Amino acid sequence: MPKESLYPARRRAEMQEFLRDRGQASIHELATEFGVSEDTVRRDVETLASQGSVERTHGGVTISPDDRFNGVVPFVRRIDAQAAAKDEIARVAASLIDEGQSMIIYGGTTTLALAKYLAPKRGITVVTNNLALPQELYSRGVREIYVLGGSYRLRSQVTIGPVALSDGTGKPRSIHARWAIIGVGGVSEEGTVWTSSLPEAGMMREMMDCATRTLLLADSTKFGKREFAEVADLTANTTLITEKRPSQALLDRAAEVGARVIVTSEYEESGADA
Image (cartoon, rainbow, N blue to C red):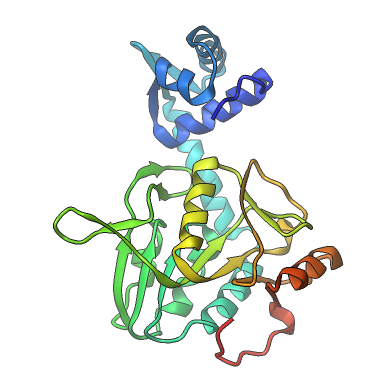
């Protein structure tokens, strides 16, 4: 992920985010991750240390305790942000899922809102990287819940890694589900889905590739936004669920590629697949 062309301030901000997710890293690891020299990393680290964001260690750097605590706050705050819209989006998304179906659910506060609506459904199988979801979802109706492994992201309370599970003997197995359920950071008017992190974008895309159909959950604040990393374009296998009607340009693009757009205020539940 070469980033030598980034302005120093932006590179340091992304370095800080990287360290919030990882907790610590060596100077060499940071130089490799950001595509700059180790001397550049050292200067960046000195700047971040002077701001109290990181602490130097022998040969590396760790996120400061104060900043690590602050890193959890955005996830907590996002739970309350647009809460009514997320609840409606989650309710409609759950209405499209039949008992006995399987789904791969990406982390985030919108997908977390699904839990109370999925819990009554019997025989469902859930695969997720959302560490907050299993305890919210557990009920006698859920057949199985699997948590994907990988690196831990403190700020978003997810794991980042391959979309695969062990078969019990230690051998990884590819999986397939009826649904991929993804909450995204932005949807451009051209019908492209975005998120803030390149590794997260890759995992979201892999989840979509492992499913027959995708439910994209996006409240209206996400429209017209381009985040750092592109996830995928809308396709005929995609259903976008939101609480307000998006722009005509986005609706036209969805119609052009055969994607379905559901506006919760206009939706009448039928129980049919999206």
